[in-house]
Length: 292
Image (cartoon, rainbow, N blue to C red; front, top):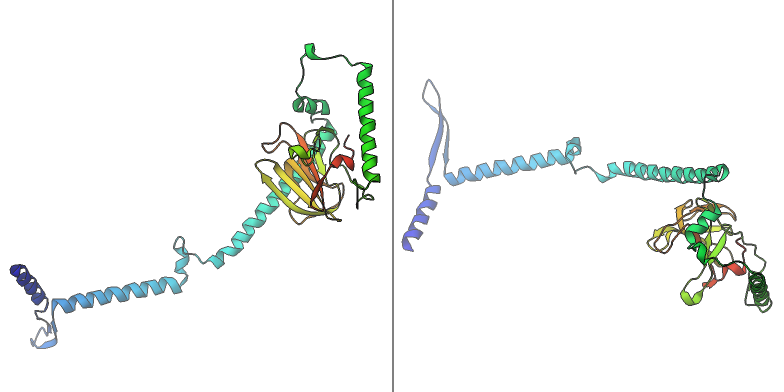
């Protein structure tokens, strides 16, 4: 243990040994400059030179434009115009995509290149084999007529008793699409709207004027849009293939806001799920609109 301590002390003493560095005149041999240095002093001088060099290099990079050439060192303020331009380009691309989709949908309707209502019905409603088809009888027609009559009577009674269009009896609702109702309003099954089978690529229309308060995609309902109307009315349009409006947009009654689709997991064919809410409570849309 003592030997190790002695060796360490000797190494430390060597750092304190003095050395003379001199510059001598070549002709007269006179000493012009003389420095008395130790290894420790030399190490301190070298370390100081390196520290000053590193500081000057960092200052040169930080206070001169050369820092822009260093990857990842750009000033964020210089990137803001490019980020804003990128967002604006994306917004314009989305607007162009929606416009093209809207135009193509109308072209398809005019040229007859869309699915017919019968084709849509075949996809949405399971077909029966020929052996399972039952011939229509007169009793069936009478039963259907009686059902329609009773349905209309219930609607009239709701209005007269104040349980129907209470507070909104004078409002005219524009049907969002024309088609057959495949699933009615059923609160017991938490189905707070109606499913309307419509021709593929049909534009979905706003039922009333208002402002778009939601335009998003969810895993269950796909592309969904919601509109806030006057009188504390809110309408929802779900399972669209594309949305034509954004949050904050002002829409008029009958204006196209989306395209019929089959998005989301809670769907089995092209259709629109339409909901109508009044004062925070769901309404049966069939009490206020005729879809077929």
